[in-house]
Length: 312
Image (cartoon, rainbow, N blue to C red):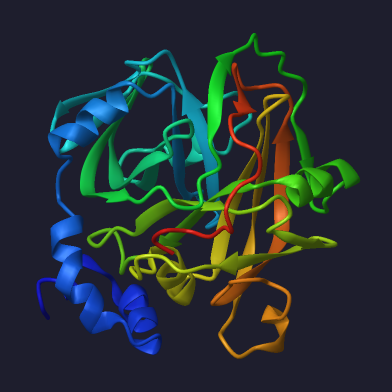
């Protein structure tokens, strides 16, 4: 196995091979993917007011969601550890994910500057003040497909959590109007000695880029840097967690379900402008946390470019 191959698991390598990019990725991936956070990443996380996290619950369902705090709630005691002095909101499935030894994906994203960095981690410790993570991989993502938004504060007004197995009209409407979502995916390991890895990624596009049909969503996949972290995880564990944010009202819509790929040449890609492939997500269950976020955002640019994910 080459040094580049060691950066990816079997599912990621299989997708890279299927799509004819494995050799190309091997040329640049070792320069991008590190086993520690470079100094500029550490400074970036320290200034963020929220972090996207993703992982899998004890029943095997992936989830993506947010944790937040005043800038500085994310600390890096050294280049291989991230400390979060915050806990998930009441009712958030992240409570079940953040257990010692669990694999967790992290995404730091600053919508106003369209900057983002990814982390693959494991939970090192959980205490009353927060969570400590051990970093396995750290890498930057390019700014393409991020809809620019400026951040403003607000007083959270949480309402009772609503749990469901089918999408209500309001949920489908939020998805149909969305230009951003976050995707959690995992790769199971061989047992306790070989823990699973987890990832959380950003998907973006023009409003309506995610198609809704009942409780099934179709998500286009656009040109990126060809690592295929998300699709590689789907190849070995076809489940996903999706997080949609109501940037105006402060709601979180969290979904978990099964996925199936739509490869190039499939007629179902017709009408998905610019998509190289796509995947469907079929809801198993979900929940909505109304008004839970103390953060609000507003658009700083009219519209957005054609969407996708920079690292698939």
